[in-house]
Length: 257
Image (cartoon, rainbow, N blue to C red; front, side, top):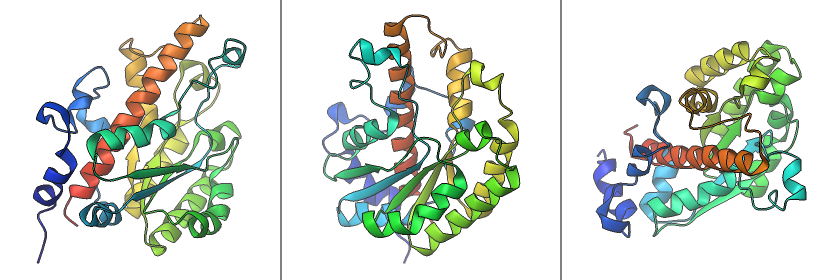
């Protein structure tokens, strides 16, 4: 018998939401992106099982650390107040599924390449026992000019082992800013990451394209001149990434296998 996932989870996820609004409605505001930047192509069976059982959902984030903002923020007391999207993901999921607890474990670290993350996966899985792994990949690899084939092979191997361990996977690709884009050739890594994701049935939060879209529309300014404006701009984009990722995760949970 095949479950109607949308019907089964819909009431559970919406229960407690204000004004009966859908958990996807948040993205109809200033965080909205074109549909092709929010595609969910594969189901998240393990997330679905947790939501169906109303058990806590454990999410492990690995890869290179998300931007923590300008070094000048520390002198103005802003560094500790800043929340990168992994820290905001718990809040975004809690808004959409108030009766189920989401536990987000952030194990990202500075200058982590895909081979370095892949080498740590077995230990991280044994220690944290996640239902879903979010893997940030590509930024450090491109900056360090790691051979793109080495990058792709490590990513493929890591994704296979995550599947073997019985967890769902979301990839998060490279961060975007015009400044870094002029210094590094990100395109080979973005293309290879997409190929690997399609081969391994892994959904992708297309962070590079989303941040570029916000920049081109004037919603996000990576080169904001003032400290306060830098903080506001970074907080906006990380808040939007958390909202979009939460929506994509729950969309994947409702897809039929």
